[in-house]
Length: 400
Image 1 (cartoon, one colour):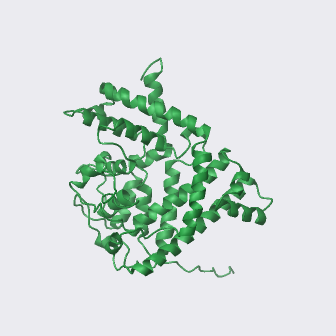
Image 2 (cartoon, rainbow, N blue to C red):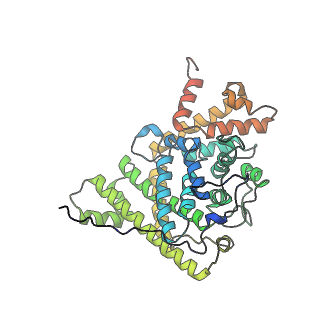
Image 3 (cartoon, rainbow, N blue to C red):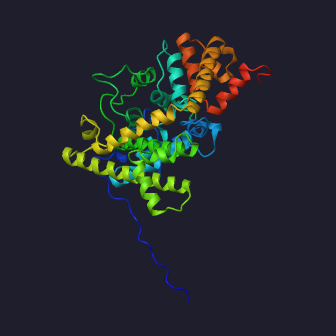
């Protein structure tokens, strides 16, 4: 007779905190739609992001390395998935809406052009006289205009809370000392007020801090694996150094790549624990009773402790000098700058070589509209597609 099966207790989600976003109380969508019978509004938003064209393209958009430099380095897609996982963990612990936090995390990088921040810098330069370029604003543009999957409206028609979180996850956009708003946000704000002068809700703040946790740890991982700095260099760094020392003591015979993975995993856990403790302390002091209390708090609530911030500052300075400015990365950036700048100049001068769909968007427009259409086209490219377009248009041979 078989032994009785051991039953593992089910882990049911805790009730949401008073200051969490409440899906049944959403401020709704710009265009009214019947609600889903099987999903909350925030779950539906998340699913729309996952099924979007822009999300699929993240597979071949770079973080630090250009896509063809190795299959094991992070891309925007793998980074976004890692941010989403960390976001869900923190949101669950703080009794927030996990689906909203995950949705903002999955959407936060949709507006990045090819070649990461290098591509963004060049598009800012090219768009200097035409309303500028900002990857967060471009994300909003994708979500509200460029994605075309619905007959009744452009964009994905996401909830107010998701759009607010995507646009403001790093803090308020208007107020004293703030830079002028990007054109895409100005345009959208005319029809949909996202409270640009307040902080975002906690779920979006969680996604923002999860982004920091993910890229700092995984840039260390990728930098070590790529040989941009040595294991010995890393031993002397704040945060990752003590983690490596503990791993080497605990598993001295483990392969180097396993030791790196163990150290990065432990460090992510340490940073998540720090964020949860600091956030709980700030919530206890603020005593918010609603999500809007968070928005009007006048400061970020989800954050690292000051000691963790100091250590992170040291780690970031090392990565900036020894990874992001490494000559191999600089060479790739130099290539990327030329490609994006040349593509923009050519498409702006000869818009008739754009694909038909994009030429149709130019009709009846002036130079500013032409520049924005060209910018949208290039910003939507993957690294791989941008390289192929450049080769087709600037090499000698068939351009088809």
